[in-house]
Image 1 (tube, helix red, strand yellow):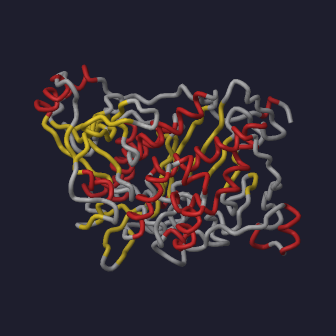
Image 2: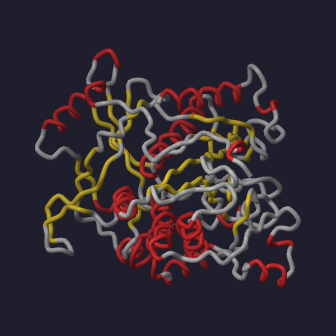
Image 3: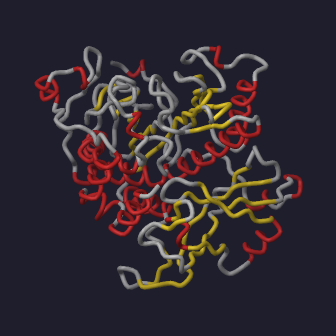
Length: 454
């Protein structure tokens, strides 16, 4: 295979989207009146405080900009707090001014992500004063990324957002019926066509690269594919993309849902996550994985049964992850362009665009938590030079589920993924790498407590 056949756009970890600066935010010509200061709690609810711009500018001029948020907000399920979350106490939620984006579905408004901090500094593990909050999902991902970046390893992440448009929820009725990737998914003059087009326009208007969109396989199902970014920015962009999808659909009288599987006789919805590994020492060639890619993949596969507690965090998630429906299947394996493997090697022979498509993620997962787990585990494999012993299950003749036990064993496929929500939770609780090193004991304990009652 020669480089003449290399294909795909070559992105680098320096790739960025277009956000709004504080100076632009304050320009009268932009017409901004309100700021949505947003966060994503441990079970993937997007929460916010809506702040008039006039007061937000005063916050920015204060010695420590931020708003008070009850500590229970990260563990609030409906009107109850999960075990370990008390009604007392308050965090300072500090805006990250690099994340300002227009809300195309709400003229005159922008959204900003931020960081949870303790109001009063406390001695950290090194006895130095800190305001870090161990339960902050964005901060957890940032910490994981700093560890890899300090070692010279960076990642790019791109997301596919699958969703279903409904015109009724009681009874459940799709807004459209169409064939997979067919033009009849966008009939001219229809409410659905107008909605999908407005979603696509909104994503781009907010500074996020939209690569393509198309009709998916299930009734009313569509997919928006956005470009790769550094992981923290990619998660921010995904949250914003989802807000655009749900709010734009609501404007047109439709309900957009990211539920894992609505129709048991059709395809489910996922949040396929494309990850590429980058390092000055990671020289990629066309005919095989680089050592860093191999070690990254080996560790993901080793810890996959526990990772699903973070990436498939609801009982409904396991209605999608079955064999024979292009969801990734139920066997721990990987395969070149194999959509029946939980990890698909995409663009395998193209060094410039090769990536791992992680298929065991859905829209119910908090993207910061999911990426912290996946990338933390993957980087651990790179750090320890984990050896990839499992062979490529390309699925050209048989998928893992179609093979005999002996055929699977010959490829090194010897384990199943977690088949239920309960099993995934037990696997996470027993996984020392995730619990003690990647997420931390407190985060793992509190995450499992909140997740238990969702």
